[in-house]
Length: 167
Length: 197
Image (cartoon, rainbow over all chains, first blue to last red; front, side, top):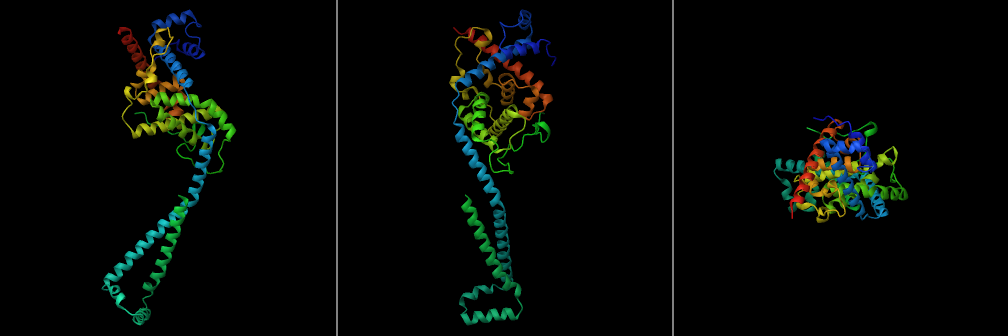
C-alpha cells in the first residue's frame, strides 16, 4: 500500500526548490501526469506552499519586547510560587491539626457530659478553682491542648496572610 | 492506535514544555535582542501554521503568544535555531492538542474565516485553482497538522514525529492517507467549481 514512487524524491526536490513544473525534467512532468501518487504530491505541496505564502503575507505580529517582558514576569511569578509553596503546605498542615484538635476537644467534652456549657455561668473564683481542680486531677493533656491549639491557629493565620500577600 | 509519545532523553528531549519551570536560573534563557531576532524569523511560519490548522484567527493569536511565553520560560534547547524553531512548533502543537482535547468537536467549514475561502487571483494552473481551506477544514485536526508540517513547513518525517509526539514509524502512513484524502477533496472542489456557471 505504501510503495513509494521512484520519482517521488526528485519531484519533492523540484517542488521545494520552486522548479516545478517549468524548471524540471520533461520526463518527470510526463510521469506526474500518469502517476497518482506523484500527482497528489505535486497538487498538495503546491496548494500548501501557496497557502503558507498567503498566510505569511497577512500576518500582524505582536511586539517581541512585550512578549519578552510578559515571559519575564511569568518567570518571576514561578520563582515566587516555589518560595511560597512550603508555607502553603505548612498552612494546610496547621489547619488540619487544628481541626483534629478541635474535634478531639469536642469529643472529650461530649464524653464528660458537656461540662463546658456551664462555663459561662462560672464566676472567676470558681473558674480558677476548676482549673486548679483539673491540675490537681493531673488532666495535663487537656491543659496543654489550649496553648497548642492557640499556636496552631496563629501559625495558620500567618500562613494565610503570606498566601494572600502572594496573590 | 497511535499514542502520543513523549521523548524524555536524547536528542528528542524537549524540556519543560508544559510549564514555565526552569529552576536553575531566574533569568530568561534568551535575552531581549536575541528573542526579537528569533521572533521575526519564526513568527510568520508559526502564525501560518496555527491559523491554518486551527482555522480560527483569534485562537491562533492566543496560542501563538502562549507558545512564545512557554518557549521563553523553558530551558533553551541545544542545537541552534533549527532546534529552537522545532521546539517552538512542538509547544504550539501541544497547545493545539490541548485545545482539541477540551473541544472534541472537529472544526467545520463554517468555522473557517471567509478570507481563507477566497479564490486566489491570477493562478492559471489546474493545481493552483483549488484553494486549500475548504478541503483542509474537512480533514481531522491531526491530519491538518501533519500535512502542514510536511508540505508547508517541509519538515521530515522524523522532525514531524518530534513535533507532534507521534511515533516516527506511523508518520509515513498517516501522511500518505491524509495526502490522498486532501488531494481527492481538492480535485472534487475543482470539478464542482468548473460545473458552476
